[in-house]
Length: 207
Image 1: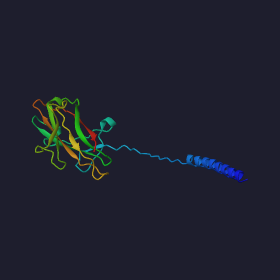
Image 2 (image 1 turned 120 degrees about the horizontal axis):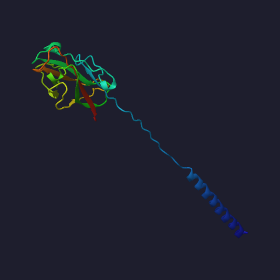
Image 3 (image 1 turned 120 degrees about the vertical axis):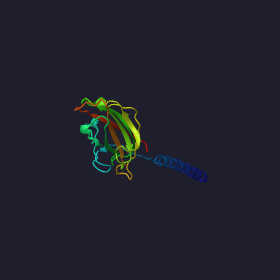
Image 4 (image 1 turned 30 degrees about the horizontal axis):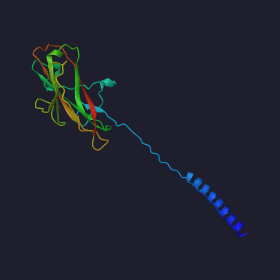
């Protein structure tokens, strides 16, 4: 009897062990976990604006490639642009800056000049000089000559200037004043007009 009882107990333990083993296997199979991540990517903004009024007011977009009208420069003393004589020089300021939505600094480069068909384009030369925002655009202006031309249809060289984004964010950048000087040559034809359109391109730079 003792032998049979012992055998039953051994069988019972083995059976229990088999059941326990199955139970452990099922429990381990239920353990799992995972992680997920997402990212949002938003492009920055970039826009150049100009003013013929002052360093602080009158700014608007003058991108003719986007359908805007070019800014009309107001050439003034010592001569009057509407009644020039050979040897006269007239000056006009134009301020450019990055607007308040812009999130990158930039470089500004003169990319060309297009002459009109008034007739005197070949008898007028010009230079464009980058000067301080508050400086006077006139004979005494000093700075970096960014472009010049022996006629209103030519551009000699192109020197870039830096444009900084606004600090703090959400404010316009510090403006650069472009001082245009146009000189009447000896061959200036009486009672004949001339027009020219200058183009400048700003390219964003990495901060």
